[in-house]
Length: 85
Image 1 (tube, rainbow, N blue to C red):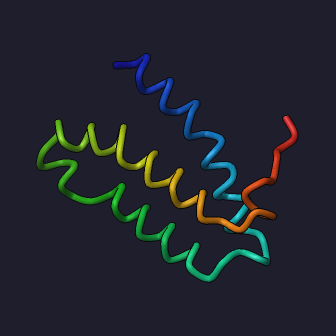
Image 2 (tube, one colour; image 1 turned 90 degrees about the vertical axis):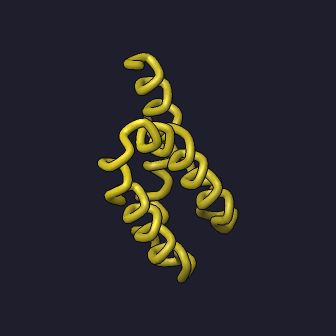
């Protein structure tokens, strides 16, 4: 389980960095802020506490996929931004 969490973190770290950049960019699309807020609220929904098994599946599969899809909808000048390491 720990290995799976580390793999998912490494995969979504780049997406989270790109989302943070896009949210602070002055040319961000108008839909990005509400969509990010909805995704955040979905991550914190109380059903994760009521059904722990479904919450883990939700957090490990659906949230990274939704985040990646959200970033695919960004304009090219924001989506193609590369970060210096």
